[in-house]
Image 1 (tube, rainbow, N blue to C red):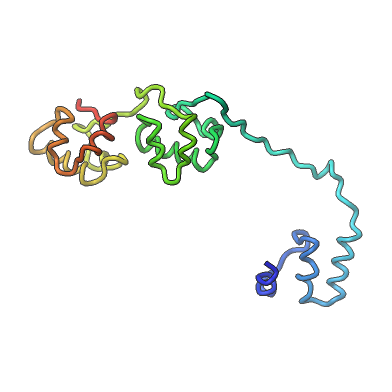
Image 2 (image 1 turned 90 degrees about the vertical axis):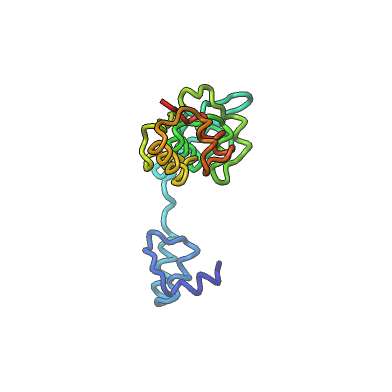
Length: 197
């Protein structure tokens, strides 16, 4: 605002080539009136720049998906994700990061676990093949590696490691139901990612 500018202008120095015309008189009030008027005169009488020389290429806009078009979120790169209405570079990056942490999406609804994700965008997204999902070898991975999965965490990973140490390999998902830190919701979320080999 003008009020903020009046307060801050004594602390700011802007090189002449970066000044806007309407800022120049205010910036130069601190200097002599001769300097201020000469700068304004120089700008006012400068020839207009050649539009062909200074023209910038027009930005290319991403063509969004329409109708019943869909994308497989396990295969899509950031450029394809940006074609989804409501998804820009920020959410495209977040989707790819979360996909990497999960080891792939088992369902498009998992995108709603990304903070502030636009739910309307789900209409254009699907998981065509859950074979893309990377499995957690829970009988082979260390506690440190298990706990990196978003659905696992330290306590569940430690409980798995403790069970293996005392009872041997975990044979099936029913064993997890007997462990203290695994709720039914936890087990349902983890089920597509577990391998008991």
